[in-house]
Image (cartoon, rainbow, N blue to C red; front, top):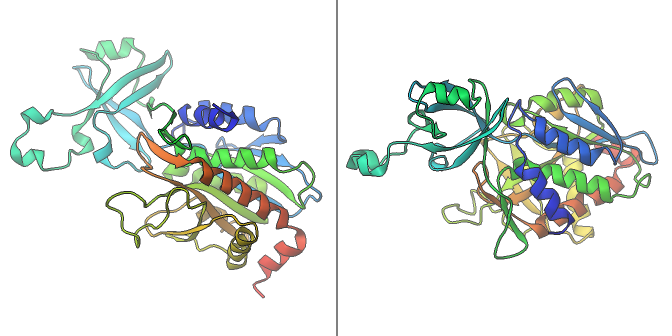
Length: 358
């Protein structure tokens, strides 16, 4: 594996569901400490300051380090574990998947189960199995066995999935690309942009609890107080069976995506156009996306104080919010290139113009 692949493997295989980001935060801190001064808000989001030619404008690069997961809700007398979700899961993708319960004694691996198809009636077979009818089996036979393993109500549960390079060596599969790929773009950008050569100060931010209501973004933006924000995300790739072009036209190898609209934010138009013009001039492929049923950290960041011009750039990702999602290396690299090119243009004059609405 090359350096980027090793980083993606490390980031995606780490555990870090909302509110339980300890492991991934430690890894992110390790990468960021060589890049600038690190601070942390009281929610656990990390902030890395990388000075440039000028202390202002202040540019916030944000990617959320939490992933969707679960939490132990109830331990039954027969040793089976009921769980609740943290983040947006579709029940259909849960059955038969391995999970790891993070306990005080270490990790306890189990599998999500339900009534097997052999025992289902014809009517039951035609219906989606609801999460309330699922359980986690860790091989225990009693509540006491579960307690001996160290499992308690409230323990976090993380999907189990290894980072894998697929048949096309430029395609990668793993859990948690939403949004470890955004964190990786932020790290790669801050590593590659020449130190002290950008006309601004960059704040690389790894936020927490995005998947349960963009909570870390709400607090970290207070510490950064940015003039401009670039949100780095995964985006829903529509190049799979069952998705129509008018639902999602984003595809792997098509380049980074620029979010034109979501349920809680419309990007600043001048900043949006700057991204479009920069991509064209730099010959970086760019796709456009909308998201009517969701939002990003940008939803609260762009409303900070008097308002913060904000855009969202995404790496196209197949099968997000599941145990296994897929990205393409070219899209990742082009996202880093575009972020760096835009950062070099965000000097005081340009940012003042972006804010002017003139």
